[in-house]
Length: 154
Image (tube, rainbow, N blue to C red; front, side):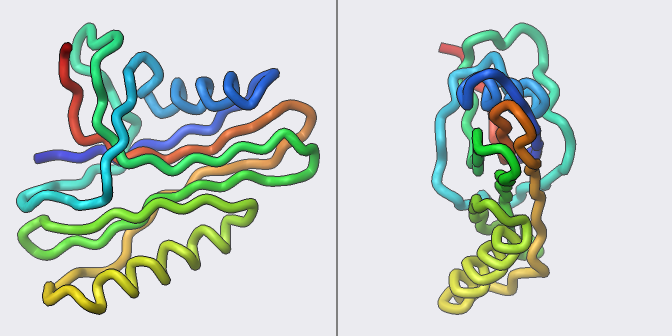
């Protein structure tokens, strides 16, 4: 299995349109998003890239783990991030966090995964992560990161 970790930053006249713009930047804007918990199946290869649909998938279900954050207060920031660990055979765990500070998101990812691997009897590798965010100037902004599992037709 292949999971693509994609990210987007958007702005708009409303927080919702900023979110849609971030979805567009990540390549996942024309889907019905189905949130998943954070378990990575065995044999998974994770790729950091913009998600590219294969053909006409307008309205399909898209199974994802997603972190997102928005702000509409000028001068503040919105950050989101996904972190993960994997065993040599590809099994693993995702965590998703958001905050007004990039550093806080990084720290929460490290702490969450540190706690989660502590009580699992697995040989997990180094923590990996993707972050996205930005500062609100005069319009709402949204940062998002999504781990895309697969698309499914209705």
